Length: 418
Ligand SMILES: Cc1cc2nc3c(=O)[nH]c(=O)nc-3n(C[C@H](O)[C@H](O)[C@H](O)COP(=O)(O)OP(=O)(O)OC[C@H]3O[C@@H](n4cnc5c(N)ncnc54)[C@H](O)[C@@H]3O)c2cc1C
Image (cartoon, rainbow, N blue to C red; front, side, top):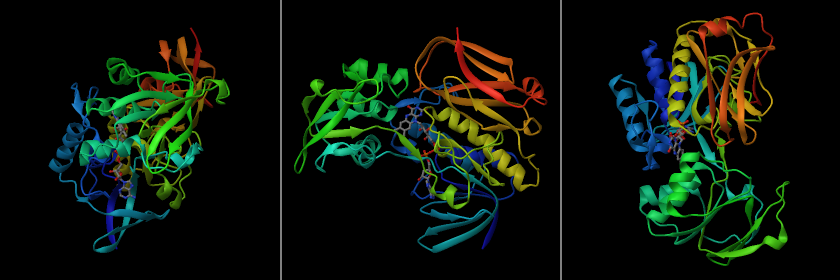
């Protein structure tokens, strides 16, 4: 069994930034374990631009963005174990990974969970019809087209308007396919506004809000789908049913944080995010185990993943070097109009500089105000023309504001009128 100060599970943008954060904070030994044959995670298949605007003030492709982080990690001499799948973590931070040399056992002083997320498949949707070929998750289709050079089909319907679905609607069009429509069951899109404009509007692809696929047709290969409008309770309205011939259905119906390992380690998960409950230092409910990136909560922008992961890595290094983190903390409550807020607890003693609260709203709010209150006292307010669930919101509280926390019992983040 090998002893390592900080073991980082996953070599995507979160794992790479955590490694950089841990190294810069002075961790003695680090190891990034990645199951794939290369670093970069999901960004390797993201050949579209739109990455790095916040971090580098440049518009990079996903692969360019991850290449920069990989270079930074390599320059710092971060060791990496590729082609190695972590299969178990114990609460006392023993990590078991499997690779061609067999089972590797490590004892870590601190662990950073950075395993990303996976796509929701057809099986979780309950759509009637045959189990024909031609149905793919959008991310799988993205890998086929961008990495393997295979076209999944020619006549496409996209179900779900998450960012991957929007990006794939544009990619399939650019590669010569005809995208008939993007159907979204909610009355608003699940993706970023900029992606709706750049991926659908610019290519004349219709976005059918409050619509869903209710039936799938085809024997060996998909021949069409039935689409219908839904009412307020998301039940299909039968008289609006219409048949759309197509040979490919792409699903972009949500991402699920990959937390099977976290559960093995006894980490408590939030039903709202599917990710671990963490405090201001990104430490989970199990001491010495930290989480960041999409395994913690699904992000739309990788820049925020890198920012929070660097902090998580630095805190993991601090923990490994014996810097104690005070436990407990003041609960952060998702108030009116807010679905969840990360972190879930803040202990003012642990905050070094500033802290970012990241959250998603429950619906579309116009001309409203984002508010943060310590008990009943408002410490932050920001007017917003529009807030939508598809865009993660962020509020940064400075150290001076955090200092006012000492006597508070709760922190509430909410959407208030005007
Ligand atoms: C299709 C798509 C398009 C996107 N477009 C944009 C965009 O235009 N702009 C933008 O800013 N952001 C975009 N994003 C978001 C951004 O890319 C993600 O938020 C970011 O990649 C998350 O990083 P991560 O490291 O948490 O996860 P990932 O990138 O998923 O990395 C997780 C890594 O962990 C590894 N792993 C998992 N389990 C194990 C295990 N048991 N053992 C070892 N390794 C393991 C995986 O192999 C993977 O390499 C997009 C995301 C997707 C999916």
